[in-house]
Image 1 (cartoon, rainbow, N blue to C red):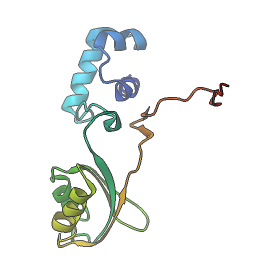
Image 2 (cartoon, helix red, strand yellow):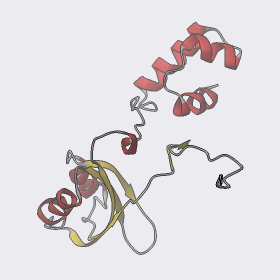
Image 3 (cartoon, helix red, strand yellow):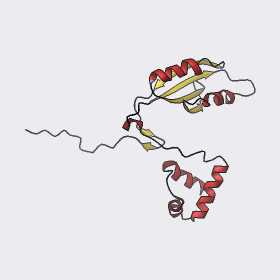
Image 4 (cartoon, rainbow, N blue to C red):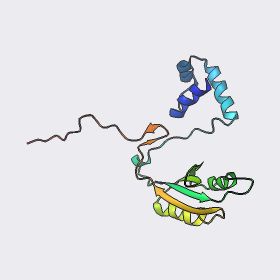
Length: 161
């Protein structure tokens, strides 16, 4: 039942325990107990809201930063990743396989703010060997949810005399 609860609330965190119970053929008490247990176990870490910033007047920029690092002896990448995710600008940090070690995703008010973060906070860190920054131009889907309105099937332009 846990996986089914997680699947539903990952797409809609506003579902009530009553709605989940009806969807999963369980009682609200069973759902509430499972959710509380998963919160205590650290399986459910929070309930963020997905915001389509493009539809607001707020200027936001998202950047993905590839980071090559020298892992610390005996601690690997964990200590550095922890130091990086402590920065307020950082949304996510992922350990990667392939040509670089960490992906850092940050949100800023401008490209200049992102550049300042990279040059003054991230790149100077002792274990960081190099960074490469990529700016998100447009978001189409995030956290499994589309952020763009679906176009109608008939996109032909109406021509009037």
